Length: 152
Image (cartoon, rainbow, N blue to C red; front, side, top):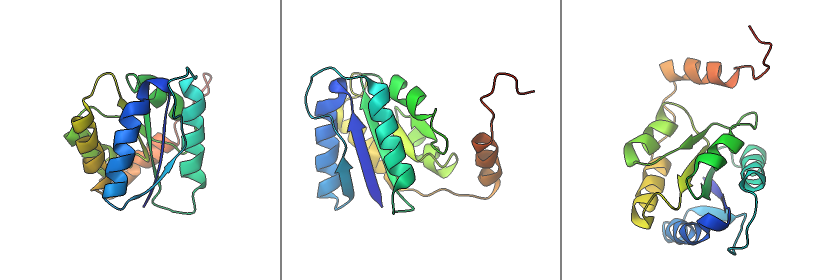
């Protein structure tokens, strides 16, 4: 499994800790930046990481996005067709995001989570697989929701 990770300026320090955790666990990780606290627009990073996940040669690739609250990253990533991004704030939701919703990206809030909890969330998200079964039909429905405002 390959992990693509990115943050805005508000998530740089948490991203460093998570990258170290992933490397310590021998999980392949690609840091897509940023690595300074110079202000950037989080939607740009959400798009970059999302497309890296979608275009990866690793069929099990996942993404981690970090901003101040995780909200902006989640909203932005979910605009990309094929991305199912989940803002997670606890370990149970991290597992369910993958097992039930087949989330291929999680978003974290650097200003709302402690670093140790954030690492536990990542650990839980990466420790499970999509269960399929009854959940597959639901995920398929999610993937086919129209964003056209004229849809019936």
